[in-house]
Image 1 (cartoon, rainbow, N blue to C red):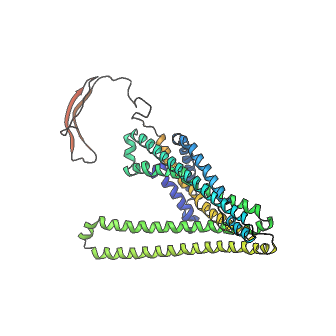
Image 2 (cartoon, rainbow, N blue to C red):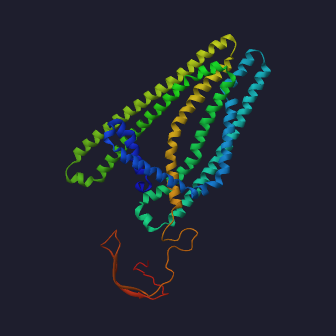
Image 3 (cartoon, rainbow, N blue to C red):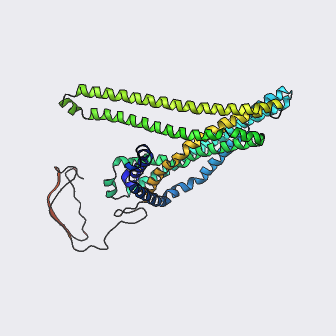
Length: 428
């Protein structure tokens, strides 16, 4: 089925462009064939996107609830960015240091009210998100099952049962992830980053804001390369796990062959070697990932220290409060940098989330050629029958078991308008 839907072709193109050509050179790939394959995939994706009408009809009733959840999420982010910050709470300590205890009490009450309101908003949002996710997955699953039951036998002949089950369960679940969870994560990261930049821009001088933003540019570039390297490490670890699992299944599945050729000791040694090599590769991968995280965390701390170093002089001159410097530092180092990292990691994966949507859309939009489609009275049928049907010495056996004959020399005639049923020994 992955050949039929184009997934295999896309993976081959990505392998050629991302691995073969950069590592081995252009001479190991046929550029004309690659361009033709890419042109074909673009045409295929364009045709597949046209088939998303039925899927959109299933999503349409849930759009108002999704918009309501997004509005609650945006409101919670705005409230949390203003009231639920360390700098906002530290201002209460500054008020107390100045002897203004009424302002301190007012600020603490604002923080408490903001905390309560934020939790209420988040509780309502999560409840509605869970409801719309369950309803959407149920609608898609029911639509897929309804479409599957109307397909011709030819569809089930070319599609393995495991793929059909994956369409019915995994792809339907991923539709909810693609439409609800992923946009929610991207919206949260983007809004948090934008609000943090806007607040820092308004509470600090322009020169200091520009100086504090400069370290974030190389940090964002570093995050992109860190993400690419981490993705390669994850892919390598996945391949290692799959290879180890396949080796185990191969040995246990062919245990008779192993015994017949007295290969027990050799296969045990081979399995031990593969396991040790897999363990070594996984250890190297984990070490490389820790080094990558070390570089990122160190660069994040450097960015934080640069901001503190710039703002400390302004605090000394009285042009900036300690709470404002504290608030600005953590907004830039965490609200901006970490959410920028989240966007760098999530946005490239959006294209992968479109694949289950396309597969579901193809299935929902496919119409059987013989069986009766949904909303139609019947499938293909002749306008009228002439003559009769004659069985003359008919023999039949199912292709899965040619040794078991179902019909042996069957002969009879079926007249026009006559209904005939063939009943076996078991009554079926």
